[in-house]
Image (tube, rainbow over all chains, first blue to last red):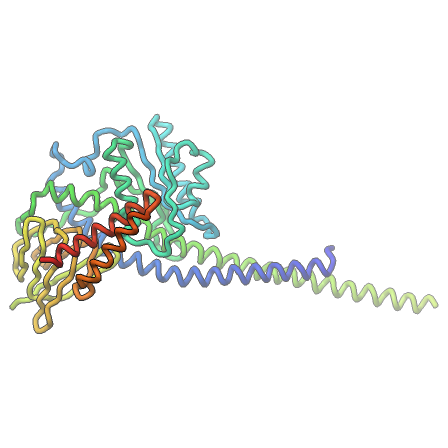
Amino acid sequence: MPSLKTLRNRIASVKATQKITKAMQMVAAAKLRKAQMAAEAARPYAERMNTVLANLAKGLEGQPDAPVLLAGNGRDQVHLLLVATAERGLCGAFNSSIARLARDHANRLLAEGKTVKILCIGRKGADQLKRQFADKIIDIIDLKALKTIGFGDADAIGKRVIAMFAKGEYDVCTLFYSRFKSVISQIPTAQRIVPAEVQGTAVSTGGIYEYEPDEATILSDLLPRNVSVQIFRALLENGASEQGARMSAMDSATRNAGEMIKKLTTVYNRSRQAMITKELIEIISGAEAL
Amino acid sequence: MAAFKFELVSPEKLILSEEVDQVVVPGTDGDFTVLAGHSPVMTTIRPGFIDIVRAGGKPSKIFIRGGFADVAPNGLTILAEKAMPAEELKADVIAAQIKNAEEDLADAKTEAAKTAAAEILGQLKDIQAALGK
């Protein structure tokens, strides 16, 4: 049986922890609202981009002169994994679930005899992948200094990814991030961005489209931009997911702390009672002996 | 004049979505005016101003950079990487900012800071060129 003093100390420290987790939960809730708004505001652009790409890609499908960013360079040997995670921990399984998805993907590729390169966006994913793939990680992009992610930041990453592709440093690029479904559900997702995976179906516009300059020129202008847009969208979704995950993780931490305090208080009260009873017995038996 | 639907979208948000009468778009191959019932065109844009004319409202100018315009039967959509209302752009302010950006570029130590500074400078120069006309 621990002494009353240690019990009191433990209760006090659990209470202090509970205060911190509660504060973190509220901060995460406020940030989540902002992040969610940013993610929703970015959707129209990404959707339009997809529709336009789908329209253009349909026209060029199967043609030999299709841009390499769309059709690929014909090889499938070197894979670049772009792993986007958070900069901070304490957000439940958020970081590890993205890292796990990336790790499984990398292991599968390695088993097939492919070469894997990893580019990490965010420290936390890098920390987890470092254990197994320390020699595969080519760089870690740190976004810690940024309060909000602007398109410029995503564009810089996108330009870098495309420059690497142009130099032939990889053949296929896959982006890993967590899609925000709701506060309690974030889905780790893998998306191929080079060559572009055209989602959505082409919409028939009824009339004949005129292209200015020609389709190929527009497409070659659009495809690099699309890579940046996809990265931007992934980063925003990730931001919202991170805050959501942190919110629910901190919520259950607060609840756990509450339960623990309740249990400890019961133990404390019981042992206090036992102590009093013991002292009384001692006094009474002492008096009787006289 | 018949109105049509016009949307201006940047990666960060939907900037404008309204019924307008006429929009002048700076296309890569030359400026063109979009009116209701324009035949479907898809074009990339060069940095410059779009001119918006609304029924009864006053016309407005917005600077756009990088992106494309999509004229579909149901309206005009411009996807622009950057968009700024013209009122916020004054020649002397831009000139001061260019000077600032050039100093930043000279001071930049890391590779990332250098690219960022060069990007800003390029943008400002585009605006200045568009204003000069």
